[in-house]
Image (cartoon, rainbow, N blue to C red; front, side):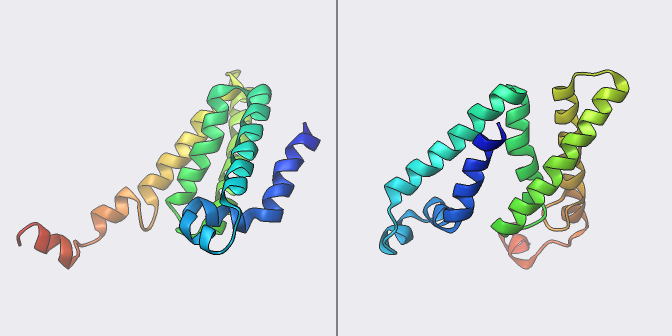
Length: 152
């Protein structure tokens, strides 16, 4: 499992910038001479390999929670892709370990506990994020464009 899991990581480390370029702007990538179709295919194979490998190890619900929730949590905190990637990993790994600890302590299902902890971290970030959080939107005064649009 570790060897198979290391392959996508090594591929992303080797051609990560190209994959991001193709994912964000296909026309720019094409103009830059990047092989868009091959890079798309590589990305699809990497994602599929990761999901299939993960499904076998942890199950459907947990795979979806581990793919989406840490990324959504990180998105609340930053706009930069590299920072989002690091932050998602920083949220996902300790959140998973905390979920396993909750599972062990209270004799609960491991997958459900991990999902609950990661979801709790997302909700906490959703409320407290400085830019996109609910609290920030309640405290921040409305900007001039929203006042004009509202007819004030």
